Image (tube, rainbow, N blue to C red; front, top):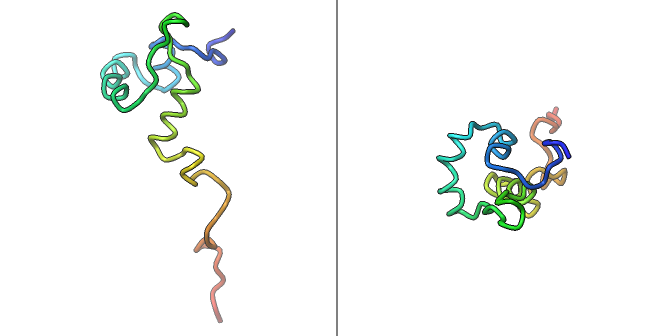
Length: 86
């Protein structure tokens, strides 16, 4: 299994997948964990489950399915598509 398809990640793999250095991630992890970020799973070598981490980040940035963002449904016409009245 390659790193790109691995589901359970070490902290260094997690940092790489998130585009961070391991030092930055290590600094952020206590606050993230307090906010509900997935903890390492002892059954899987104390690695974190990437889909759960990604879901946490999506919720944190308002991209969860329940947020309504990131979906094609619109509640009104986009202002740039409105026709000018003559």
